[in-house]
Image 1 (cartoon, rainbow, N blue to C red):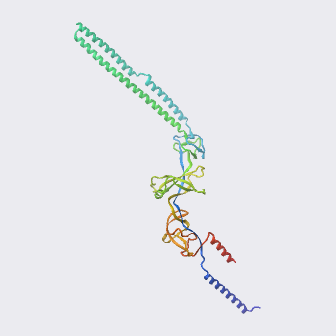
Image 2 (cartoon, rainbow, N blue to C red):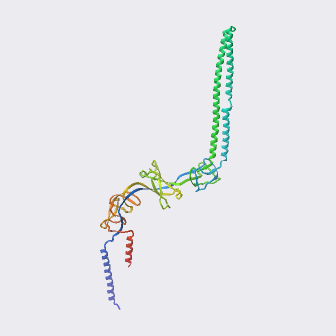
Length: 430
């Protein structure tokens, strides 16, 4: 049987042992060296690097036609449904046009009548004024001939001494008057014939032209009842149905050419100046795994007055129709390209002092050292280094973020730290 004194001594021994154990552990921890951080390194590479210009845009159709009638009339028939592929010139909708066809027929009859009147005026009919003027000239010609014979007879009688010279002078004067009257009538007949025929021909021509104009207008009004597609494309909207009245100027069918799409975006002037027509670009579309290739098809010649940016269009092929109009997309374009540039992975860049940039370099002493660098072109994967490191430096690409200058490191592979931690955990458990 254990006495109280024995139990007290036993308890004291246990406590002393525990204190010695704790003291020994702390001493071992203090004596253990700091563990090295596992990092991955790579030397800078040289190669071409291009500036990336990014922007957001919306996909728009290559061309679009919102077709509206020019007359108000009920819809008689529709020949296409939404989603139908149509060709340029294809008949899409017809409106009620029997009244317009009647007007066109009436105008056609008026043209035939005007043509007949024109023919009669210019070829068959001799105007009354011309006939009267010609008759007057003929009558005066006869009077002139009589006066001339009278003059000749009186001159012969005067030579024979049968009449006086006064009678001869009277006959000569009468002949002169008849001649003047005949010449005047002859000129008048010619002028009347020329003027009257020309006036009548012009009047008939004017009536014919007017009739033809009314026919053209009536035929145009009738043609407005047939709506054709002005482009090749797909019917995207058809809000009305047969029997409903289509109002003039209100779209009743929409056709879009989606064989190619346009990504329309706005860029700062400095960025737009680095682009050229035909330059390649990448368009990232939601739901599409791979980037879609596009080309620059338009660069605005002037700044937008509201945003002082330049409008740029990218053209994407869409033969299979998988891309939809109105989709918001993210665009990446290539700007200035620097050949044979010194570059490191983008993840190697760490914040430097005084808001600069730096990289962590694995030194020969087994420690990480911070080096301030000057950056050039940056992309999602790589960064151009203008100064600060040499091509032979071992730049820390993984594990360098947050390290202090002089931190001990060891070069390993991705996952080495995880394996080490897993092994340490197992030892602790044992």
